[in-house]
Length: 202
Image 1: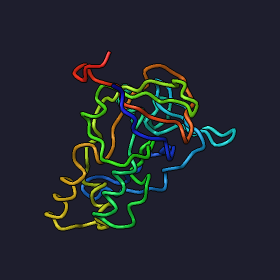
Image 2: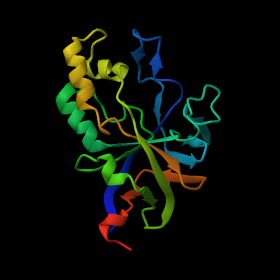
Image 3: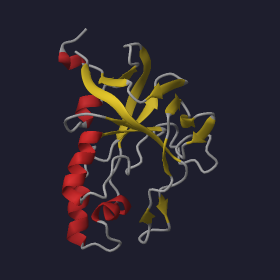
Image 4: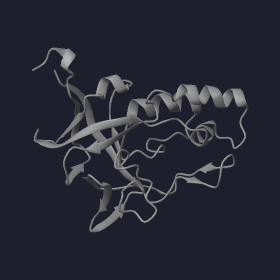
């Protein structure tokens, strides 16, 4: 059967790249991450809505400096439980949303790719289906974000390896694509994972 994950706690967009400079001196910044009231999900990516203002996410194909990969990374999803784990491991500077996911869902446990690989459904607060999401990939951990977690521009190599290992496997979030569009989602909407064929569900 389908599995309840939790309500959406935060919606946000990246106005521009959150990595600046060139490797290996590339730096991770959070200033381009902006919390929004609502989020318009489309097959091109997401658009943040604050009143009458629209903010196009940098992974949207319509963004002038788009980082879109053929629409497979246009929407990103994270979980509050992952932030609690990272905060416990790295420190209080790891605030919810600092990894830059568009949709952050309130859950009480770690969510792995196996839990959501068959897709997600977003429901309104009244239980109506708003949108289906295809989970396209795990967001790959990177050295730049790991240095941010370690709060160091030049961490010990072993500490960097440990950080990369810790956020491996979906801790950093997941990329998704909209099954149909456009649709507006709100804080408080609920996300459920779709049952797999092996669950024995119809």
